[in-house]
Image 1 (cartoon, helix red, strand yellow):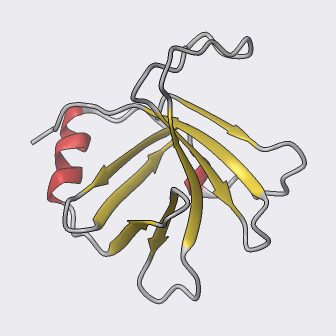
Image 2 (tube, rainbow, N blue to C red; image 1 turned 60 degrees about the vertical axis):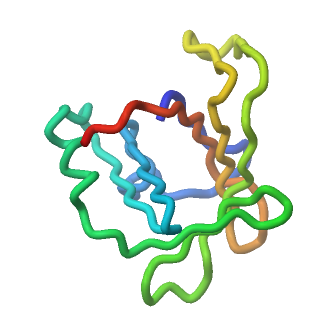
Length: 127
């Protein structure tokens, strides 16, 4: 994750571990994924461990480009609007530009309103 922010007016528990600043996603081709959020930067060993972690979360993209992820036992899929950046963009609030190929995920609540936005950048495999 390159950048993280809450949507205007969103009510969230900022102590929820899902909102920690250092995040990594591993999307596997078998429609499973691994996700971790940490209060401290992840080490190379942490990233390598992600590739070995059990994959219990499933994911899919719907026809509208939304990322649907489902955890075992969850009553509903987590939904994130998923957009690919096609040109370099500079947000005046951030020193880090969005680059072509980056992905902007906008998490949605049960009411389908935005909660949080994450700018993701593909990293090389830690395998």
